[in-house]
Image (cartoon, rainbow, N blue to C red; front, side, top):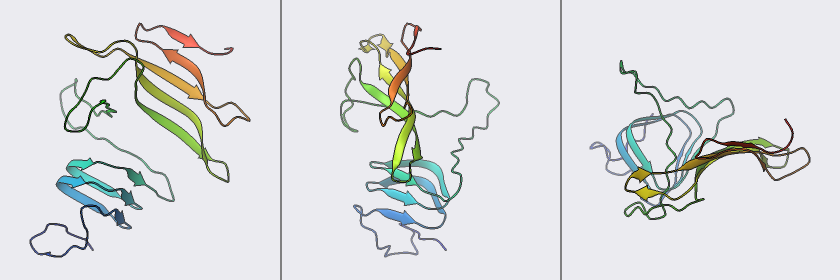
Length: 171
């Protein structure tokens, strides 16, 4: 069974633009979807086209969750990509970021029996002064790990914009 929002055959869908959308079965989106609330999906989430979320996408499942980005092309220079992008402005008016701004990251977390806690993170930062002419965005990657007995992740390795690598601790 499907809930079709905006379908000519369905005139009343019961969702207002500020509502959250909770899906307990497959959600297939064909075309472009704009959603201002939180999307919570407990099953399969299929998107064909472009989906714009101005809040969070939380996917919860009682088994493995896999994100697959599939690209089909004979062009050797084109592949799937994950882009974590940041501006100091708004969605309608982007503004240049500053040196040392966090651009994005990936967090690896496990449950302690009481709550999820961070085991490790990888974060990307601006590593210098961005420029519009030439179009330059110097960056660095920082790897954090949480030591045994601690609740705080500490920097373990840094790769700076000049390609230097800094390791913390013994190796």
